[in-house]
Image (spheres, rainbow, N blue to C red):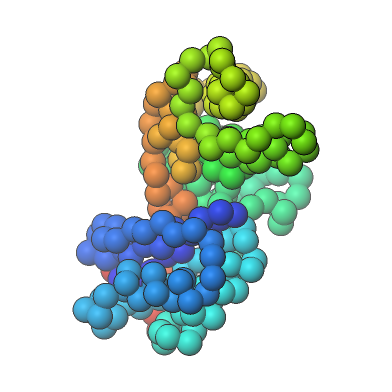
Length: 261
């Protein structure tokens, strides 16, 4: 059994994998370290400790990553590996500056290719929106990055002094009858349109039949209204971490770590 952590800008996914399946997945907001310790303790039940072998982390948030590593190091005697630095992510990266690509994008691309075994477009809808292309040979080609639904809303409230911060959800109408409803409509339908426009262009440039796979916290909210987001894999990044462990098994074994993957 292993512990996997996907640390984003707003939330952290913690999951346990064992006996061939994800056994426990919890989502917690990035916050104080005491709460983090409590949530990890509640996720890793006592009966799991004896079979827990390793922790693997994917992070785009250095501060939250440091906090998690401190909690794990102080409370559990686990070897901890970071995807992309301690363990190579097994995907060919064809971008101009491979070292600058976020590990979450690479892990999503890896998992999508392993799932579909074909070209793919991966849509990750979170704090930021990424639309990435994977070739038929399983190569990460790059993609597009845009503000996510809630980031766009908060930026609007921050930069436009007379506009309020609005909690985003599906609007009842495209025609807002007041300022809050107008912001909600613009943010929601604008994001749906943005995602579909990017996917359409990426598919055209990719030039081959490709699956479209969606993930991220806002994917279930937006997918029913999208022309392209028909398949949602909520734990795609975690699956990319599992694939990374599989391909790095010889290295782990050389360090005394045996895993049932």
